[in-house]
Every structure is written in C-alpha cells, then in structure tokens.
Length: 293
Length: 264
Image 1 (tube, chains in turn red, brown):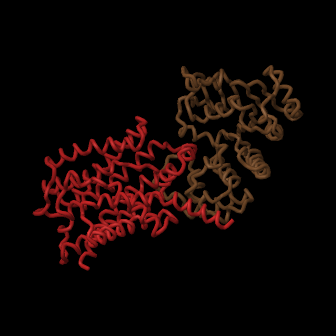
Image 2 (cartoon, chains in turn blue, orange):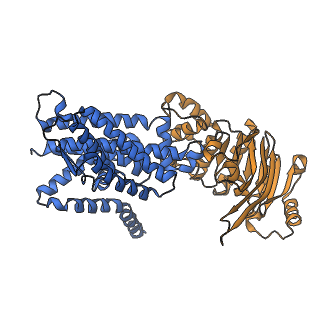
Image 3 (cartoon, rainbow over the protein chains, first blue to last red):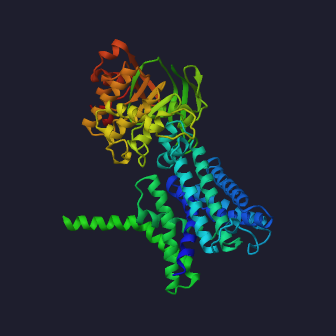
C-alpha cells in the first residue's frame, strides 16, 4: 500500500514528458526520438546547476531552455535540411549523449546532499508526499499552459500542420515554423520532466534516457484507450492519466515478481501491442461483418 | 490583376521520367475575370495552377499579382493573395479539427498569427451566417469535426474558407471532380454564387466541358503545356461543346481521343 504515493508521483513527473511526446507523436504526427536525449539533458542540466548552487526553479527553467534548443536542432535538421524526422531525432539524440556527458563532466551526478525542488519549500510533510504535491502542481500548470497555447492562433496552426500541412500552407502558415515550434515545445517539456525526475530520484545519469520514447508512447496510448480523445483537452488529461496508469501497471508487475531488468522489454511489448490494436480491431470487425452476412 | 509571363516547368529534368509540363505559358487576368480551364490529362492545367500557387518554383518566367512579383515567394506567403480549393476533398480542411476551428484558421489567412484565442465565441455568429449561405445545415454543427462531413460538404466548406478573407485570386483545381454528379452541381452552384456575388478573380480547372461553358466569362484550353484556345465575352457565351471539340482538333492537329475531355 505504501507504494501508491510514489507510484502516482512518478506517473505525474513522467506525464510532463508524455505530454511532450503527445505533441510530436499525435499533434505533429512525427515520432521524435530527440526525447531520448532531451530527457537526460534536462536531468543533467538541472543537476549540474543544482550542484553549482543555483536555485531549483532556476535550474529547471534553464533545463527547459536547453531542451527547447535540442528541439529546435531536430526541427531545423528536418525542415531546412530535409532529413526525415525520425532520423533527425536520432541524430540529435546521439549528439546529446556527448553533450550530456560534457554538462555533467562524468556519467552521473548525485543530488543526495543538495537542496532540490522537493526540499525547497518549507512544508512539514515527508519527501514522498512533497513529490506528489509538487508533481501535481507542476502537471496542472503545464497542462493549463498547453491547453491555452494550443487554443491560440499559433497553437491551432501547429495542430493543423499535423492534420494537414497542405491546408495550413494554403492558409498562409509556414509549416517549417510550426514544426520547429512544436518540437521546441515538446522537448522543453521533456527536459522539465527529466529535471524533475532526476531531483526525485536523487541523481542524474547519462543513461537515464533509454526508452523514454517508448514510455511516452505507452502513456499516450494507454491514456487514449482508457480515457478518450474527444477534444484536445480530453486528450491532454488522458495522457496524464495514461502516464499514471502506466506506472501503476509497472508497479504491479514488479510486485508480481517480474525482474526489473525485463521492464523495458515488457514496455516495448506493451506498446507494440497497443500500436497494432487498430489492425486487429479492423480484422475483427471484418470477421464480424462476414459472420453477419 | 494576375500576370503570368512566359513560364515553363519541367519535372525531373535530365532523368528518364523527365516531363515537360509547361512551355512558355503567358496569361493575363483582369480583376473580376472568371476563367475556366479545360484540357486533357497532362495538358498542364494543374501545373499552371500549382505554379501560380507556389507549390513548386517555375524554371523561368514571372508571375505577378497586382504588380507584385511573386515568382520567388513561398507557397504560404502567396496565400495572402490566393485562396485555393483542391481536387481532393481531404486536402482543403483539417479533418481532426472542428468546423469552427477550420473557419477561424481560414479567416486569418495571410495575417501574422498571434497568441490570441483562435476561435473566440464572438465570431460564432459570423461563422454561422456564412455556413447558412451554403444551405447544407452546417450552421448547427460548428463543433463537429470536419472529418465527419461528406466530400461535398467538405468542398463547400473549403470554398467558404478560401474566400473568407477576401482573396485577390481564387484557384479551383477540379474541385468538383471527386464528387458524385448531383453534389458536384451543388458545389458548382455555390461556387458560381460566391464568385459572382463577390466579383472574385477566379481560375477554375474542370474536366467537364459543359461546366466550363456554363461558368465564367472566359475559357482557356490547354494542350501539351501550352494555352491553345482563349475565348472570352460574347464569343464564349455562344460556344458549344462541339465548337470546343473542333477548336481542339484544329489547334492541336489531332483527334480528341481523351475520354476524360469528352465527359459532359
């Protein structure tokens, strides 16, 4: 039972990354692998700054900026140099591995003796509760900002770019701009998530980004299936809840005795199944129709 | 208004799939001209239209609108002046967004986008009135996703969107070709209404000769990347399908063999 609070907290902190993945994967219709680099980038930047004595809020803010920069790089590789989006993301991801090592100066940084965002506010609650509270507040703020932004003229243009680039170009919008903007926003969020996760774990590690995209996709898909996609607001809430459900699923299978080393394999299989659902559903429906005839 | 001066376009030059699509085409449209464009497959109709819209750069020649040389402008920059409806009903709208959101985007065509709310409630009445003019019952479905509409409804909506922010030039690329005959006529009637009421300078490709004769004040026929017939005014009013066929034979020196041209 005492696992419930940390599980939900982790779900909240990671859901910010999942919102980032949602922006690229669903809104822009791009599978952006930059997140595998920008997640540890956020963690590395924030941790290095915390160790250097910056306040947690400043550290998270700068981590967000570096994440945005990495999104811009992928965006420019894709739009200006015409490199396919998937490959552009992979290139940035690989480059960021070196960048992250540079930022940290070593493979990992410990935050054990250092004030983090979770020890910053003088509230009389234990650390796990603090993570839950701050995670909840951060997710609410970020969800509201996203809901507002994607409802504005510029946000609507980004959404339209994903649905139909021809249409939005014919309406006078530079799709190179909207794609770069979407990637910027997405990776900024992913870096914030990385910064928060590092602080809750008490360390940043150069390898902590492995599988980020799959976790993000799992959250997006689980959320969509369980909580719907009626509107943009509905989708946003679904992604957040999806991230929490994903963490609960993981906690349950670990409790049932699955070795932690198999976690990524389990997640990959889960996502593969979820992604292939539409195909199976179509086949099932076709069979049903045949039977009905 | 629109001046197309001596433009040419060759696709895939220097490869085995090389295709000369336009050869030294010149065309001048006066403000308020409604020009229908006919011609067989591969005649260069769509290439001409896409060249004007900026989908791809032309090899040589100039295109200008109201004395602004737009030859080097990108597609999205030209959208400030140009409204477009495509052949594919899927192309002109964002399926996953609401009717209201699509209209809001179209109402800002060519304007710099800001962080203002995209589809404010205050614009709903305006949108409703516009949709009412289509007579398709869409005025009560502002919050429906466009993907739920039929092809004809989507084309009518696209037409509305293309003309919402007054375009200097309206480009219609066989916008009724993918619709069933009855819906096609309905959309064509709406087209005529809007273009005539607002005196829009319009270029409309059609494969239907009767439509080409019925609509507009001028007709051009293309063949092999060139304009081979250009009639306007009373000459156009008195044209018949048979006239068109014989003009085509005379100008191209070949029998009309393309079924698609004979439709109608």
